[in-house]
Length: 77
Image (cartoon, rainbow, N blue to C red; front, side, top):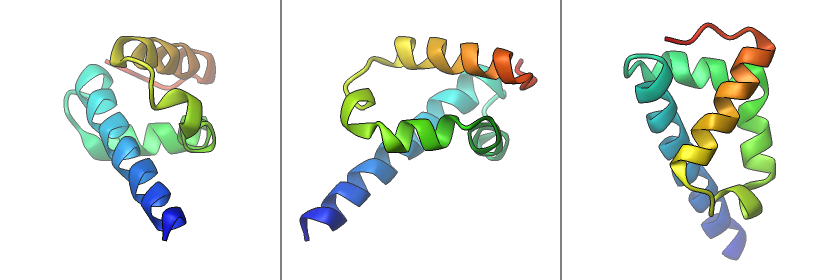
């Protein structure tokens, strides 16, 4: 049961990540945000390190994701 709660927490966190990334970099397009997170490896990084990253502020997260997107050649607006 605790594992299910953790999975729910991670998924809620990742939905939040999609939302802030879509607004910041993709004019609100959540599909593009999700695809960019998956293709760049950011999705896996944030799921794998949820225990550390979930306490970070949105500004820090967005800056880190922007750096990864630039490094990986992801087109952002």
